[in-house]
Each structure stands twice: as C-alpha cells, then as structure tokens.
Length: 382
Image 1: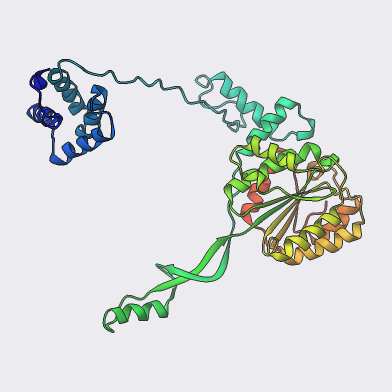
Image 2: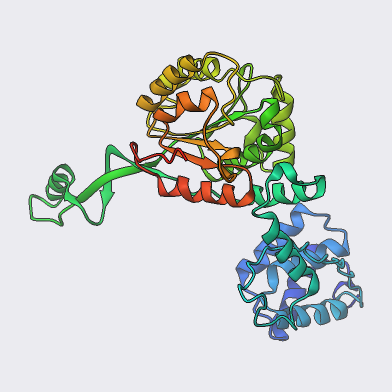
C-alpha cells in the first residue's frame, strides 16, 4: 500500500494517513487523532475494518468529510475499503386511531381518507357506547386495547412542607442566610410555597361471577392508572381480599392482566363485600393506604353477607378517604335503581355513583378522577 510500502510503526502509518486527510480538507485536530488511536487500541489493530471504522467515527464530522475520508482511505491503503453493513429499516407498525365522527356523517376529506381508517373510526365510535357484556371476543379485545390506552390524570394535594419558589410568601430563614453570606448587606428576598404531591388512588375491584364481564375492563383501566400515577394501589374483592398492585406494574397490559388473574384465587366466585372492605381497612386503610386517598370501588353491589356490615365499613372508609367513587356497571342502563341490599347500605357513604359498562363510561371515570370531586357532593341515586 502507498503509505506502508516500507516497514514502519503502525502509529506512523496512521499519522501519515491523517496528514493526507488534512491535505484533502478534512479538519484533523490532535484531539481527533488521539481519539482515533484510543479507539483502535480497544479494537483489533491488525484488522482493516477496525482501522476504517475507528477513523471514520472519530475523524469525520459531516457527510462531506465522510466522502473525502472514504476516498483517501481507499487510495492510502491500496484500495482496501471495508463495506459498511447495510441496515434494513423496517416500517413502524401503525396503530388504529379512533377518530370521532362528524355529526353530519361526512368529514372534510372523505375522498382522501383511507377506507380502513374510516372503518376503524366508525367501528370504535359504535363500540364506545356498547355494554362490554354484550360484545363478542374480537370486539371485547378491541375495547380492552382502547381502555389500556387511557391515562387518568395524576391528582395533587397540598402538603405542609414548603419548597423554594419564584413567588409566594417570603422565606425568612433563607433570606437571612443569604444576607449573612453577603456580609449582612440587603439581598434578594427568598420565597417559598407549599409543596404538592400526587394523591393516592386505590381500586377495589369486584371479581365475582356477576362482575366477570366488567372486571377485566376495570382492571385494564386500573393498570393504565398504575402506569400513569405512581402510588396507585389495586385490590380485588370477592370471597377474599387480594392485593395485585405488584402484578399490574408491568408495562404490557396483557402480561400484567395475566399475572393479576393468576394471583387471584377467587375469580368468578361469590361476593362478601362487607368482610373484604373491613379486611382492607384493618390491614391497609388505617395504616395510610386509604387516608386522604381517592378510593374507587367497582362492583354491582350483590352482597352475600350482611348488608349492615357493609354499611358500617363504608362509613369507616368515608371518614378516611378523600373521595369514594362507586363504579356500578348497571348504572348505565335505563331505569336503573339501587335495589340490592349492598348498594342501598353503601350509597349513603359514597360521594359519586357512576357507570362502568363501556368505553365511554371508562372515559367519563377518567375525567371524574381528574376533576377530583369534593367530599360531600350530592350522589344521584336514580
């Protein structure tokens, strides 16, 4: 090769190569040369591929310099030019997006819109209001994917702790310390305000047989909340209380739901809401899990135990929690009235009673949790 006809030290060969690069207009600084030698020291110095790539990565800073580098390399090292590996760029998978339909039934660019997008949008618009218990397996899977993409907003609460801020009350301690650092001269007023923290969200999901069509969708909503809001706690209630927060922390919805289902031993069993709410309060609620939290109970209110016990425990829960929201899938049906003993015992201690039978109901629940209704708001019992 041109620069290596006589036996010379490898460093001299590389230095000669960099000089040729400089003659061709490539900016070769001592720092770049040193970086090239260090890179080559980590690779196989006897490999032309290693020489080529260590120099190209460290000596070239623009596409123009890459072209000059390739030309000089091929000439200097007798035409040897390693072929770069070709990366095949796969197209990114597209995810169907539900687009709300125009009330007139036609959008501005109907002629240009792809048929599959229009079909997906109209199909999702229809499924948004359908009762999930009436859907087939394919439709239910599509609803579950949509619910998994919901992101309930993180609620905040004001704490007693103060933190520095650009506006707010004057922080006397920090202001005085700043003055002392400046020899007692007047300094800028330091200010602070009360810190904010996310308010805890707790789910109690009924997994009894009567709630089977709705429990899966509600748990997917809870999984979305766990991903969006750190500190969210999820329990299942049936014939026993099961904490599944750890299982729902995974990123993949299907894997998280599979792990949660495997952890629940009483899936599609009976319901003893009073006993399970009592166990939750005794083991978790009084230790801080329910204190000041927004508690969401998803159940149809069918109680195999004593409704009076459920009423007593709901009264305890209402004293601890910031807000109690009851999600009943039958609430969305026309002519619904809370006639079961469990619902009638619990309602006096519930702040909000909402539906939970469809995608639209889950979206309304997400907006309700973001609005953070105040304790004592009137509950519509109709």
